[in-house]
Image (cartoon, rainbow, N blue to C red; front, side, top):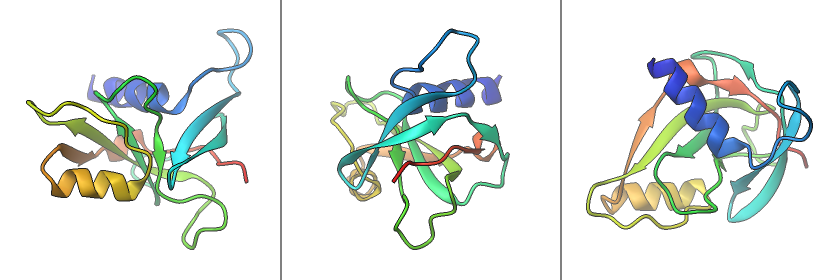
Length: 130
């Protein structure tokens, strides 16, 4: 059940609109990276526990919240979108706000606004387009 929920969270955070029919495997999506919106090809291939690129899925964010890529092409340490999935949950009593970078996630965590949890069984591969 936990794997199903984690996968659903990641997919929901990653995909803003999958092209094609419901049976289609590949689509296009959008992510935040360093405050900008970047494109991705949504054809996730699981790499449970093997992700190396940080990915943040906000579980209870504001409308328009996308998944957050910690790295992208051109960044040192980008491994082609081998995502190490982390969930980001706004803590009770905190009004959610838009997070658009891993630095914003770190600042929100340091402020006590969010809890970040690693979910290795949800790791997947999905490239960011340059």
